[in-house]
Image 1 (cartoon, rainbow, N blue to C red):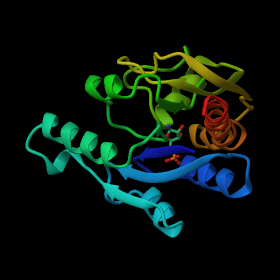
Image 2: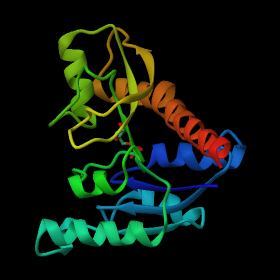
Image 3: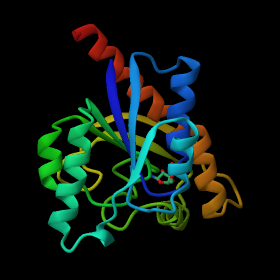
Length: 200
Ligand code: GRF
């Protein structure tokens, strides 16, 4: 059984896609044990609680130093004995000590076809604003392993999405979520879960 924890910051539509995929059997051999947000008002926390999943807020604002925040986050994750950590719209930089503690066991969903429109400063709507400004005809989403860089880890899955005439950043974001993110993030988790099942 793959025990996963999901880190969130916002609406939690990617978290919901994972919850729904587990319920429907698209994801097997997996238990969603914990959801953590840095944002106390994140609707993603409501989605977790509505599905009886342990959910909590661990915010950098509640700690005197960044190091104390990192320590609190790592201690929480450790308590849940997680096999995989999923960053689903999580906007806080993952500290190197966390990457080292979970080698090739942290994955992230990014709303572009990496290496385009990624790295520091590219998150949420900013990604789609940049894609529209550049005039690309195809964009999409990427699931990748998290390393100590920003959006630089090995790519696991990608899915392309067409940019349409008249797209605004908001319209494009929604299409990328619906046609790519919500599909490849559960798929990536299922790939890892089935590998874990074979290894045992
Ligand atoms: C999405 O655009 C996702 O690509 C990015 O964060 C945004 C919010 O996602 N990583 P969610 O609705 O909170 O899952």
